[in-house]
Amino acid sequence: MNFMEFYYLQLPSYISLGICGSVGLLFLYIHVKKIIIDIKISNSLILLSLSSIIIQVLVVIVYQSMGNEIGSFSMFYNVINLFILTFLYIYRNEMNLNYYLYWSFALLFLMGMEIRALQTLKLGLLDAI
Image (cartoon, rainbow, N blue to C red):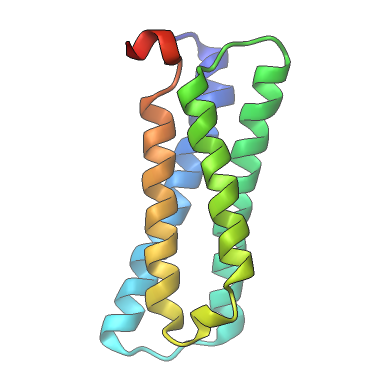
């Protein structure tokens, strides 16, 4: 893999992965220790995490639209991330019951999907057979 592929494909994924994992673990820690923080700070961290995922998926889509092959499985997991973001938006009001616990699980799940998208980079359907 050359430098440009790392710069356009892997670096945004690693940044998004780090942000989602850090915020997810922080929210889990806040839930376990019953720490009280301002809701505006929490919402800002969630917005940062979800924005990083959207930016990463858009970078992958733009990179593939320029004629570069990233693999169908990696694109599949990136599209799944968009569906997860849609469901998180739909059920955002129900997540207020255990705010930090639900968001920590959601962000850690999204981090896992980012890891899976990185693992399947350059793998298509014919490569998996």
